[in-house]
Image (cartoon, rainbow, N blue to C red; front, side):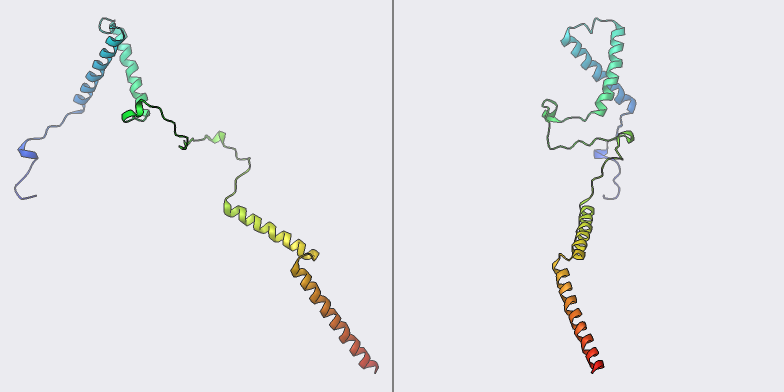
Length: 162
């Protein structure tokens, strides 16, 4: 920004609206809208008791609170109610609703780890029973070694005797 220029657009002073003025404008708009609705319904609102009007003011304030909680819909969304079956609605559970005693679902890694341990145990049982290929090969090797040792023992005895 060049030197010497201060302020806003075209030298006008800025004017700010106070919060009280904004609230007053909103109240006036709501009152006009209420009067229009009452005229459409039967025209009783303009000639009715001031107590009834005061009750309607109180009920409108509670409606405003409800509107704050609801999400404002844009365009045609307010007219058409669409339910998306793919949309997941997150529900929060209270501590009393939690089921801690029920079965837990394991993660994929935990399941695979448990399956691996069970498979290893099954293999060891089969191996000890001699039903696996590795166990059969080990037993054959042991049989060959026993025969060789028996033959060596016989030769030593014959040498001693002879």
